[in-house]
Image (cartoon, rainbow, N blue to C red; front, side, top):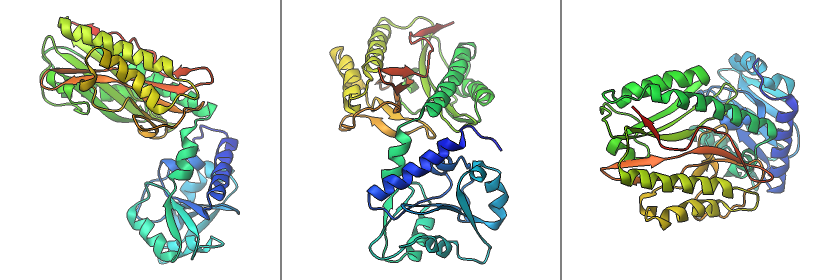
Length: 374
């Protein structure tokens, strides 16, 4: 079985989940296949119509409910080395009733946390099996835990960052006037798969398409003089995500674009340097936004400065106005200001950073300057 963390790492996560649930008055946390289950146990289970559900009571033993035909897969995962009981069910059994039976108090007056991304049909069936219990989102428990990365997780994010940096290093060899965005994107996707388990997204946005932050790629032919935004990411075998953006220029850029890009580069660098324990998420956003405002570019910055990252590309914390959460060591997120002139061009610079004890720990190391190609 593939393992990327010691069993003690998963055991600590399970214990902290139970402790936090208890402190919040939650009877149990129920987790179906997805990033939360992988975070807690290392079990990368497929989301199927049959119920697989990890039951974490606030007090008591942890149990994994699995269909009989999935027992072998579960036992081939890190679950086998953890103090987790396995409760199986046959095709004609009711797995929701089985899950409810594992709780000391599944009914009236209790609060049961269901993971935020549980299929609606499963959440509804669990509600029927536990009449009178209040369902709440498990993000209040699992989101809080996943937001603060351990040293082992930080190392995985750094490996993911180095892997996507190697892909960006090869991008200039694929960017040529006369090629389509789709052709370049296919080369990049193939390279991501050489470095990652999956290629999650490839944005190649040339010329006016660069003014759409989530353009992806199209059959547009890249032209001399285009700015090209390349935003790429994948998931490694360990389950951790990469996400990095660089902007390229097909030949010398216009004087205005070069000037604006220098402002953007400064804004991104200032925001990265501002990362430190105690700074709020919105304060980091303001550092980038104010630097763009000073140059008259803030109206062209149309999204938040960053998003958390880990087992998902987008997770807490979000670096955005209105989020007064204070940064703590271990919080990992993107810093990615940009500017987007509709019908003309756009640019973005993105790195993944981790809040360390003394400032930002950078997960990406590619140059930030506008790279002129051709």
